[in-house]
Length: 501
Image (cartoon, rainbow, N blue to C red; front, side, top):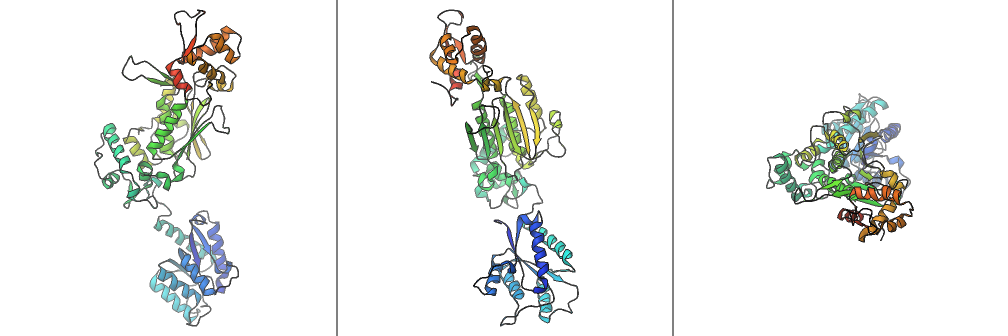
């Protein structure tokens, strides 16, 4: 019940006992109303050593809404001639509680004189609703409660990203993060605002305010601590050595921060776990790095998950690296206009959260043309990798990028391993070759006896990857030949938690 609004139903008129119980059952059974309201009825309380007036007036103090059903009877009168119902109404009025009053019947002639006076008193202060039978009462109460949710903002009529983030103020926005974004946007897209722009002006220009309050999008993009308000916006990264989920998880990170920070951290996690080859500086001052999965494709998949996820879900984005594939899961369904098949051909860009997508575009994290999935397919094809897969599984959208063929087999030990996922023996071999080792020494590590097959199946793939090299490359068959780690091999081996010394 935590977090729900408490509805106090005036509950001492015996003639309306059935209506009160029906009302409670209706609210608690309704899929929408039950999410926001709990109902208090006086008759549900156990026996207690307290005066009745102390109890029901105390419950009025605790309630968010006061709901009264007025019939013909006025009820018990205290020493001052007032019934509990009128006392409750007066208390709710004094406290400024929302009051919803429903009057049974259209004719007041049969009412107790004091009830007629109470009905008039209520009518002088607010709009009351009349009803004839229980179904009509329930329909009227439903309409009033839904209207209350809409007026108070609990029931959003605007998209999630555009509505105010409850409890957030401008003090929860980081000026440094906003300035960094404005600098990127100006450099990458020629955005009109520069880092010197006042926060209020910048957020207004980006449509990130709702009645002067930061929207959910503003907090997710530039918040000091977004997960303080939206805990499930964190991102989880996992690395498995095999092809399935198993525990304990060898490497598991939970990242927090803005959407920009989440993308950057998740991308770094994946790139630190996959194979990479470092080229020479022949073409420039910085040596190029070639990853087994195209960096741009990995980034695109992660950005898609963060930008298009359903932020109202309690689930988080999950990035899972297996021996044979990279899977990225995000909560949410494709928009009705798109199907999984559409993603494999030109299609429109239909962001779930436009106010999050726009800044991501300005900072050049995404494009607006709807080409993200097509770019992933093209980049993987260029790298000689299988076509990425997209699927909807219940409430989750899943993107899969396949690692080079044979990666899973190498990890499971049925083959010698490949550049994407060397087998356990290959990791040991690389460690053995850190200072140079003869072929026979490396064969002993792997417990292999066939020199030719060992050289072809184990050593050559490591050399092709650029992790292992001959000490006498001009004399491949020399009896003095040894094999040693390259700089790229040293860098890769340093990332392996299970490397052998």
